[in-house]
Amino acid sequence: MREYVVTMLTGGELTSFRRQLLAWFRQFQRDLPWRRRKDPYAIWLSEIMLQQTRVAAVIPYYERFLARFPDVRALAEAPQEEVLRLWSGLGYYSRARNLQKAAQQIVALHSGEFPQDEESILALPGIGSYTGAAILSIAFGAKHAVLDGNVARVLARLGTIRGDLRESRRWQSLQRTAGDLLDPQSPGAWNQAMMELGAMVCTPRAPQCRVCPAAKFCRARQSGDPESFPEKRKKPEAVQIVLAAAVLHTPRGQTLLLSPPGKKTETKPAADDIATLVSRLWHFPTVAIRKDALAELRNFLAGVLSLKNGTFHLQPLAKVRHAVTYRNVTVLSFRIAVAKIPHIRGAKSIRLEDFAKVPVSNLTRKIARAALQKTEAAEQQ
Ligand code: SF4
View (cartoon, rainbow, N blue to C red):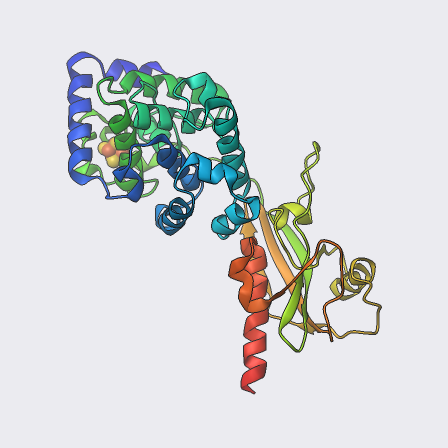
């Protein structure tokens, strides 16, 4: 399968392809904040933030994060809670935890200087072959080709490669092909150009072949149906999960958040594992529902908060819906009026309006928003 792309682009054709793609990139690349910097810390941060996340969503987070943690040392020394707070809303919080762990490792093992060799970079938590290649090529000019979903799609179309691109052997073959195409004179610009082509022109749907700098070399375009490459992957069926959450509310507007659940165990957590669903961050008292939301939430509150049945009223809030990977989560949340917040070890009492000051997941944020809307509506009556 490798031969498709490699044999198509050799010698003069390969030179011409590289020249055209790089010229296109120089002229049409987007002005993105991380492209204005060449230091490995900034490149690394942008690559981690961009994983599974859209560019437009990343930009404000990236700028805030860099302003607060301008270098590896500042990140290594910060309280983890603050790192997570600045990441709050971006999702996939293990990225932030690993980022800080890696910064601490760089300080401890490399005197705070970002390592420049592949082995040391790949030994850092959260850095895999894609991120490692991006840092090595963009920050240090090393000849490492990146392969992500965008680049893989471009390669599949250039060479009309069929089958599941993520299948291990096929992916390795694509990685070698990406390496063969890499421009040895400008590996950093080349990698960015390939990714930009996939993001802006050779998009999953309706690729813009008419303005594509690779059009002359592309087999999928010649086939007349470029969109049929790569073949669609079968998505796993979504699992439906129902949770119930309690939003305590005092007359002074205070509510209760439970502390971030501890580390995951070695075994894979269940699909409705609360710690996973709240991204191991501060969260409302929440329970996974099997049959009867009210009864199960009441039991849970009696156990965790010592709120005895019959001593409180559950006032329903708007349903919250949240999709995370293969899970469709519905949260039945309830407001509970209490005179004061019960004292629970490790829990936090905060004002609902102060959610931005605490690291919470998007799921928790949605529940807080539903509670705030209810409070505002009650105050307007
Ligand atoms: S010609 Fe079309 S299908 Fe081929 S790489 Fe360009 S945009 Fe993608």
